[in-house]
Structure formats: C-alpha cells, structure tokens
Image (cartoon, rainbow, N blue to C red; front, top):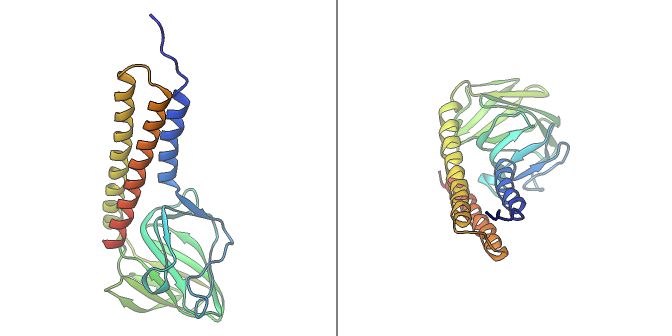
Length: 224
C-alpha cells in the first residue's frame, strides 16, 4: 500500500500553531515604553513588565488607553477588559502589578488623578495610598487621587464571576474556531492526497475563520 506524502504536515502545523499563539498573545508592549492617548492634558503610562493583550484602543472612553484580554507579565492574570490613563500632563504612571483582585501603579511628577476603566470589575472596594475620587457607573470608570508614590486599587473578589464568564465565552469561541479549522483539515485528508492548491486553500479558509472570530470578539467586547 502506497503511503501518502507528508510534505503538507508542516504547513498545517504552522497554520494551527499560528492561530493558537496569536489568540493567546496578539500583541504586547515592552516594559519601559511610554504611551498616552492625548498629549495635551495626559501624562505617560508605562509598564514594569511586558503587557500582553489581544486588542488595544487609544481612543476609548474619554481618552483612556484600553485593552482586551490583558495581562502583565508571562505569569499574570487576565482581565477581559481594562484601561487606564494619567489625567495630568505632569504625572507619569507605571503599572507594576495586575491580577483579578487588584492593581498597583507608581507615579512620578505632581501626583495627578488616574482614571481606570474596569467594566467587568465594577467599583473598587478600597484604595491603598489613594482616594477613590469618583466612580462613573455609566462608563465604568474609577478616578483615583494618590496619597503616596505607590497606589493599589482593590476589588476584593468582585471581578471573579464577570471575568470568568467573559473568559469562558472567549475561549469557547476560540475553541469553536479551532474545531472548524481542524474539521476542514480532516475532511480534506479523508478525501485523498491533498494537492498544493487544496492545502493553500485550507490555510486561507482557517485564517479567514480566525479573523472573523477575532473581529466578533472585539465587537462584543466593545458593546458589552
């Protein structure tokens, strides 16, 4: 019995691996890189570790730099949606810690207010070395005024249910996309020895499925 050629296996492996790796870490910002959404009245925001995320907007709620599926560092915890900014051009901030229950930032300069977009976490329970100046329940934004150079914002356990619900939906959607790609691959292999054109078409279809999945997740994230 003549064995089937396996030259297409590396192509399929690369396609599936690319989908998985891109879904986990679509983009990142290296530590020490300063960004801000509005250079007129805002200070810079940076990170103590690599910030990973699947999408980013510089024109979010009131010029807040916001992210989807963000985590700080390789071993960080994921927030489904999160954003922050310094609302004082003379105050620069650095995010040093982020998990489901709290975040910590340090600042240099005059110590101006910082806004945090936390639609899934809700209103913070407490602020260490700072004051919760205001909570915008409509846009889910907390404004923090610092009392010390290191500020920690706490949510207790309030983020767990919301984040887990979003995370489960996100990974279920990604799993469905992956299953569709694998299913198409199985159908192609069962139909006989695939041609080069068939393999290329398969890769294109899988890529399109993934792109549509990502677009749908971002739209849902912005509207929810």
